Length: 204
View (tube, one colour):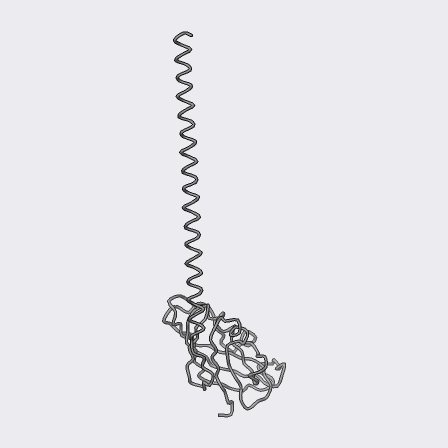
């Protein structure tokens, strides 16, 4: 075998060896990246599980407030965040209000203030959408209809940490001496919030 052939074989052998090493290194790098990504994903999942367990425990341990009156402030601990709510006034608007007839006997209008006690922004509409009015604690409740009325100020947008927003809640209801304004019983039963209830006598 002449020198040229030997040299050619040596060169090809070196190239093949380098290529094999490069493939092996690339494979090791890919495996390392995949392992790192998997470990990071598992850590993130574990942290989220711990955060959720801690949040649900906080909700479970939060006090229910079941006998609030107009002017009182209730504190909510929920999966959305923590906030205080105050019912400052209540008024019967009768069977027909702004040309809209009640589906039952009456329209009940509440003035409400929400203060964000969380460290993150809270959507005011989301908070109010989980509230209901009822004349029967054992029965279902009636949701907010403020968007249907021109003169009723509805909750909108975000409430920043430490800030508050005042607006109104209105719902149809049967005639009654006492109404109850509360977190939707379904939310409470599902473990997403503690229960807070205002006992409202419209005649007072």
